[in-house]
Length: 126
Image (cartoon, rainbow, N blue to C red; front, side, top):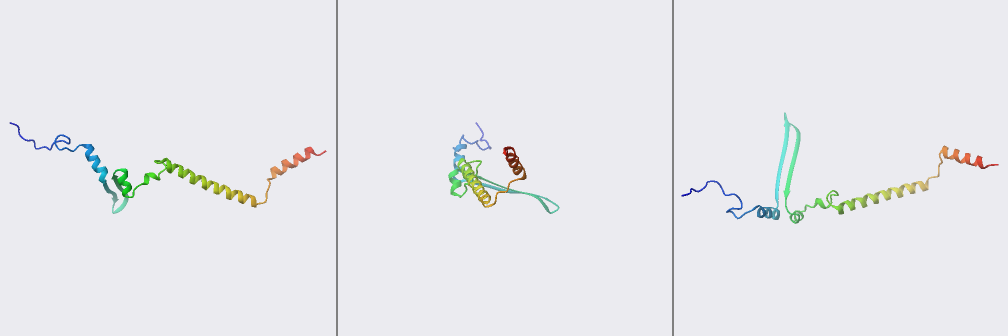
């Protein structure tokens, strides 16, 4: 005669739930874990750490309005291209503004350039 065990059965043996089922449910519904850590010394707050963890599928996260990975250049090649295109356009605008500024300003030669030009004229003069 066997006596019934007082311990619960491990997952997968009698409960019908396995890790894949649990993971599928969590990703389908999503789960949020939130917590704060505060370190105080004599009622003076020295450090606060706010932890927020969301575990969900990409589709569920988008449903909730979370899509930061799409605009992070470290995670998205499209975001990286967009950032480079924006930076390139900004640099072109700055270059155009500098060229426009330079075109409106009278040309001022440095004294060294003027001296070189004069020396060149002196050598070619008879």
